[in-house]
Image (cartoon, rainbow, N blue to C red; front, top):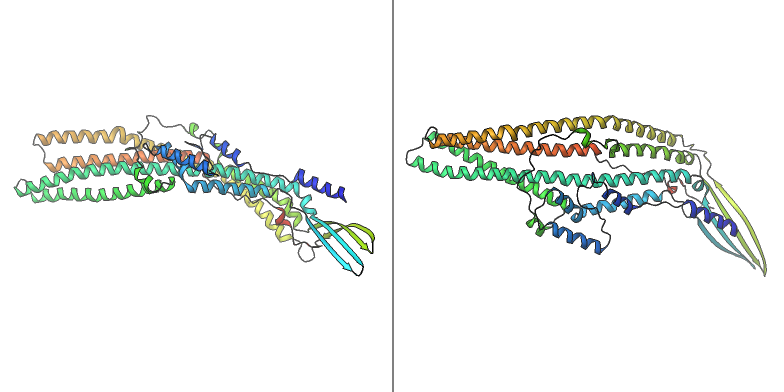
Length: 466
């Protein structure tokens, strides 16, 4: 009996181990610069790590927050990001758990009949649990891979979200600055026009036209201010700043200039075959295949085996009884055909999904790169052509006004058109940077979380008895 127990224990120890190396996965993600744009991913499990992150955030907030600093701040400050990490640890741990053998059940009984006392000991376990262990460990391994890819995908998604928000916030700041300058200039001209009208040096028509320009500038400033606040607050929320930190939070005055040459598709999409969505779709399909073998058997029956050792004491006469029992579920009413049909349909569905993701991937890249090149051409045209021409027109209008060739309204109109061109130029530059970031996003794959639904022994076990 002891040898039987030892044999079972040896099987449990040598074949029932599975784990999820969360720290190693974090380290691997930190080593991938295409995913971690700046800073370092740290899952702050204890107070010392949390304090270290707070000190790093405090140092970053002492300076202007660029794109890289915004990402690093999110990695150190955001509770939502820490929640994401620990959710993945849970996901990976549960995925690894499905590859382990359930603990056997031990029962002890004492029965008394007259002078006879009987002690019974039972050790029971599911035979299918042992038989299906290789298949369950295979599915568990795939589920752990899915959790690993999900971790990288979710970190990448969080970082990209902050980068998009940073671009939006800086562009809003820049548009607000131009709207404010335009408002100040038209406010001064409105006061001057009022005095000129009072002295009879401006017609009513010109005065109304000037007032309309001022009113439009007032509305534009209000809208720009609201957009600035909205975009800034969204970035603050993503980073995870409190009220005091939000007050000292400063952004650059303008977006980076448009580069002279566009990026080549090959430079951005060199690791295209490792897209997250393609990898996850493949693993999801492989997991469905791995689960089919286990669930196909369990859909028919379930088998439980138990070892028994009884000790009988009858007025000092001691005897032992040893044996075993096997319990088999008889598929009398349900042969499991519907369950097997559902499993087969799931496998086919996952297979077709994998094919569709592969087909869509190339199209996504073409579309994203075309949008990037179009945005680049438009932004470059604004920077090199449209804005310089409006600057020249304003200079000419200033000369003509000083020479009394044109009136004040024509001068104001030239200034207003230049401001509109600058605002449109900012929008074009912003669209370029967003489309470039989106191209990088598409190159790695739109983050898509896949369920790590590995088959576990508890899912295939039925209610057991002796």
